[in-house]
Image (cartoon, rainbow, N blue to C red; front, top):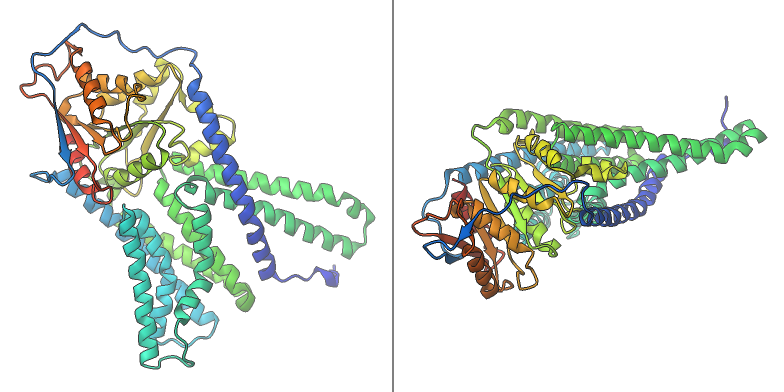
Amino acid sequence: MILAPECSIKWDGVALAILLGAIPLAIALTVATLFLYRWAVGRAMRAAAREAAPVPEPLPSSTPSRPLEIDIISQSASVTVAPACWGASIQAMRRLSTAYVLAGLAHATLATALMFWLNEIEFRPLRTLAVWTIFAWPVVAVLMITATATRKQQTMLVGAYVALLLIFEIIFETFHLRYQPGFGQLFILWVVEMGPSTAVLVLLANRAWRSVGLIALFVSIVLVAAYLLGFQFLACMVLTTKSEVLLTSMPYLQFAIILTCTALAWLLVRRAARRYQAKQESDQMFTLDSWWLLVTALEVVFQMGGAGKASFLFLLTFVGYKIVLNLGLQRLGLANLPGKPKSMLLLRVFGHSGRARTLADQVGQTWRHAGPINMIGGTDLATALLEPDELMAFWSGKLRQGFVVSPADLDTRLQKLDEKPDPDGRYRINEFFCHDNTWRATVRALAQRSAVVLMDLRGFGKDNRGCEFELAMLLGEVPLARVVLLVDRTTRIDDLKGLLTSVWEKLPSSSPNRDLAEPVLHLFQVEDSSKALRPLLSRLFAAAT
């Protein structure tokens, strides 16, 4: 069959149109998903479970013979001996970052070679190195996740990359190594090659949207492609066959195409979620793989106009990235390191989502190489810690199946608690979503099985009397040496001390802290948040040993 002349299309233009159409749709889908998910979580938390999880009746209590000493530790006060497990976690984090960097550099090397070959550019050492540096830009973004924790470190990393490009520019201009002089050409090349992918990542893979953004982009690309290509195909068939029946049926056929492609996208996303649930990938692997796949896809689109079908060779760059990463993970054996995992219970004052998210990210970057972090889920961190399997459960209308609904359900979840590392050696953050009458029993059970408890009391005041249960439970059931309370200038210390003293005076007779010769509770004082992470980690690892 000879197609009508109108059937000819430019694939690079179509691909670009699909991408430009998918981005706003992905933004809308992301915003809607996060809003509805947070609303659904809050509604479920306020509801009561069918069967309350009982908290044991308080045992007889009385005032201990020794008063509680509350020791406020400045972040500048150092730990005398750095715990060995802390050093092991830092070493594991650095080795994992090295594996990601090597995989990213492999991607950049293949992309540089393909660009020079497809565009018939002469290989020259300095020129090749400069272009390779452009394609290695995503490695900087990878290091911002895997190897840096504070904004200052991330700013310095980006600054070092910009300085490197500037050095190349100065060398090219000083020694006349260009065919035509023109300062800033490398930066223009960066804007052309890496600017679009960086803009998409900033839009859809920023920390607030990362859990949904790139998945929404994939779904949006499939939907927009189904609409545009489906319309193009059907219109071509109508013009070629001159069929009135086909013309009349065109809207229904296009709807069928979109529906079929939507089902395909759903199956692929569900498969990815099941891989994550089966611990075949970690959340970090899932995120970084999505980043590199996006960079690869955009490069295919950009090269399509000049290289045609040969532009699909750029898919080999992602294949190379995956091969090098898998070899690196197998070589390092991070998932099989010896030692028992040290779980942390992270409690917080609800209502400070940005601060709580930053704390979980910064502490978790190192701690998750030593053990899992357990938390009570809440609306403040629900979207930030949303995992692929939880997203699929929400989209499937099964959100409430993830809540603790009864004592038997709590026992089952504790028995199945994920305390094994992912393939990259990192442990997961286990969120327990609870109803209003099940969260207390959950907190108590998690505290008893944790190596250390960190409670973020920044912003604590008289209005936060809801923290009284957690503090009473910690003093009554967890050894004081395993408890670290985090405070800063926003914490009303006098109110906190008064509450702690009141709780101590009603200490249960079975408390492990009752017979301490020197009962001391440590409050870690944050003075400069940009410098507090390292001393806080040293205290946490010391408390867990």
